[in-house]
Figure 1 (cartoon, rainbow, N blue to C red):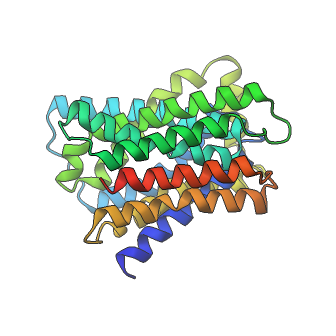
Figure 2: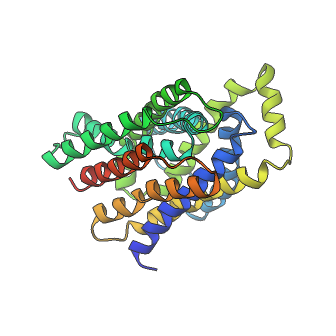
Length: 291
């Protein structure tokens, strides 16, 4: 398949995974669900990493430490915040908040990598901010309150900041093409950092429940494999596109896919404010990525 088709597949696979995570999150707390999805993907990713060679990568102690910190920020923290926000906002509104990933990336690249911010990117960031403001004022999903929307939006924004920071930290590794091993070690480090938070008191009981075969696995296992596994592979294949901006825009179509699937499969309300927020967020993210 062409790079464009792979990039489109990545966006669609992530959208389906978000819907499945939303269903799984109705029966499993965010921290145990985060640990479960990490273990499932590690079981699939480790053999792929070993195909590249059994010898450890020749990274310096500082590089190992940077990758471990990236796993703590980008997986332990960010993924947990994402799952909490998804549970409180619903898939549709959470897709709007996820568009803040692009502005965070631009700002962090400006601060730490010296990249400039052109005018279209400023306009795009303004549109995303406006979309989030509209989303906060939108009607909550059934069973949630206005306070859940505000808190979920705040936690979702923090989660997007965390994932953007973790990506900036590993940019030199990605530039060298060390994608699979970087992904595998970050995921392993993020999983290890989760254990102290869960293996005591009621957390241990929650972990035991989620790792005991149950109907939750019907959505949690596919969500993990589709979202953190296949979507990542499709995203990498999509990078064969000559223009990276086109790849990013096709990936960002996940915002539209999530909104439509949330309405069709989760019966989340489709209101004027929600539609305006999604359109503004997508347009803003496109402008930022075309910088």
